[in-house]
Length: 533
Ligand code: GLN
View (tube, rainbow, N blue to C red):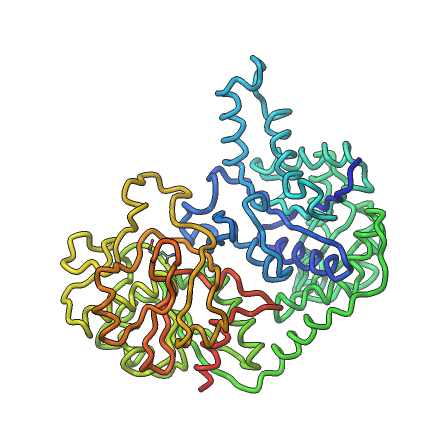
């Protein structure tokens, strides 16, 4: 007996249409109607996970509580649903092939020829079902990365076809997201790309149940009827997704057109009354009617691609709304910052965040930024590498440890104030080998961090190899940079702050991964409060 219902979200015409946001919005609405929902992303690339990808390739690498390095869409899922995702929620082609090849090496296929169909598709189907193993969820939404027609996504589409056949259409439906472009020369929105894309899907044996049309303007009923007729879907199953000012409005737009209702009917599930979405609407009202406005500098080295800092940007939106404050985030390239221009670049800011990162490019700009924020009493939040830069700066300029550095950047430094963690010293492989996922941290009560969290024990997500070198603990403490958060098992320093400063906190972990609409992250909320002043 199959209790779990499956919704697949595919995309056509172009990539970047926002399948992740549509999936998350639908999940939000189903959750609001009382269903337990999880969302999974299938990524057709061969990397085993995005952990080894440069952020310029696919944007930020998002880390789950259980330590998976995943696609940034999982961040959207968590921010919308307020429910943690896990290892099972992101699967790549690399991972699929890895497990099939491992099984082949063990002899599990008993001499058979191992093939895409059935072996790869079976493994894909197993991974899809794994999300809800033990019937943890009523509904699983699986987003298929890429665009229909890509060579890479064929085995995934074939697996969806098989699942639809095996489970029946009342247990398994497909939502196809396409683009309806507007041609200014003729003044028309065109449906042909959508028709072609659906045709492509039909060739693989899948008739989509629902179409979501991305568009920059409202589509009239005639156009939607035409799409319904030509693409063979019910009229009310053609839904428009018009560009909106914030992604958090999408669930409301989908609710207005009954996307959730259509999904539930097709899955033979009870619809019930319309969910009020009270907290969500309150958040939107605050977001759209700010009483304050501030400018924050985000100093990093991937700033040309804001997706590289997706979770940080979203955390600003959540914490800004909570503080009824509009936040203008200025993305600043750390490579551009020099001793000469630092005050010119950072001078007008109400707050500064130094971003996470790896490697030496732009590092001195980040260190100069930390110095400027410390000396100018500007609220400062350093995340992971950002914290490490604040520590290096303090060592050099307050403790007078000339040339102090992280051994990641200069392994010969005389003062390795940031050093490789003991457990990392013997590791050679790059993939999945960092200190990853949730770790406990105990916070001193007399700190700003405690005032923010209002809790002594917290759990935060990590993704790093280097750490504060506790040989220097006393030196820092005696001179005004205090380790206020410590891991109770390993004694690693997780939070530092400067009590004499207005608000200066560095964290070795990533608070941005756990900020959601309903629960904005306390550190961000407190940071924004300090920036408002
Ligand atoms: N590169 C640093 C480390 O590995 C910081 C990592 C990060 O900012 N996520 O420790």
